[in-house]
Length: 183
Image (tube, rainbow, N blue to C red; front, top):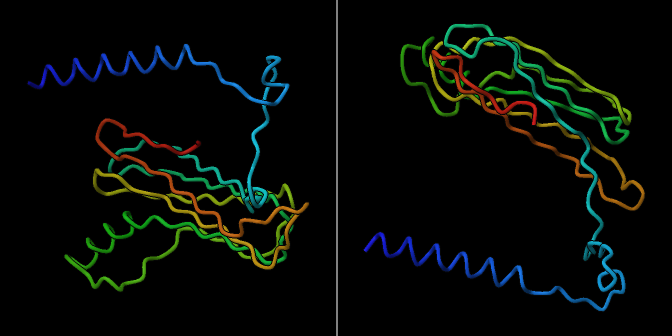
């Protein structure tokens, strides 16, 4: 029975692909009928400008007990007199706190931040923060970044996305792990 479902699904997928490849896309736009490109039309508000572009890089061996240098770079896309960037590693801090306390701890316990910035930024300015962590145990650990600006008016008629969040993960294991940092 299972084999029959796979065969039916495969035949259906091939049929859809063939049907799609034979369909013609039609448009009243002359560019489409003459082989040109039809522009994508945004309905409603223009797309927002992100206040920051964020990049994360990792240096070091992603093994338990080995130091790892994490660098976070946030490039400003708007002028902002009031900006804030915070960087946290919640899973890593939880493991460290649990080890320090010898077991469970209250859920409301605040976890320390790894890095931060407060101040004004101008378009193109890069705020970079590096810090070193050591994961005592194998596992998955995140680096969470929140960058925000306050009081920034729309730019060129486009709203500003005033809070930008990014999350990158690293796998710590005996073979050297992996990360999804610079994406």
